[in-house]
Length: 97
Image 1 (tube, rainbow, N blue to C red):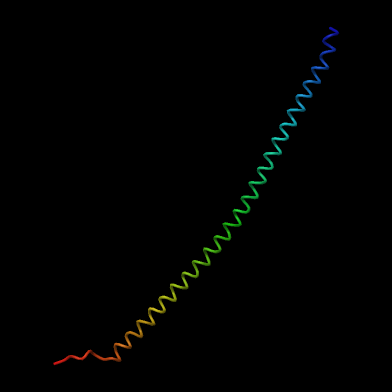
Image 2 (cartoon, helix red, strand yellow; image 1 turned 120 degrees about the vertical axis):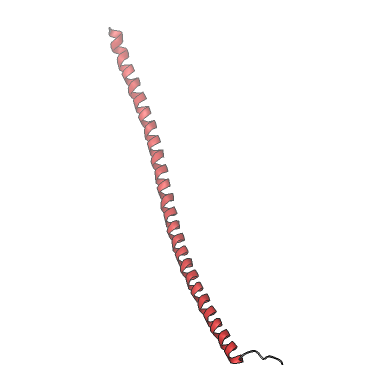
């Protein structure tokens, strides 16, 4: 029985050391995962900012396209009015007899 009492503390120490080692390994894994999560969060934040900037640029371009379409319509109307004035002022085409 004396031997069991002597080996038990050593076994207990081994189990405690093994537990401590495993805890340390788990802590390393947890820290690694936390760092990866942080990195992903930073990447997502940057991606969100880029998407917002892209959306702003698209909105500005859409507005500009709309303005250009209006300008084109105005120019077409202006040309149509000038063309109809030119036709009226020149009169009917002359016919040769």
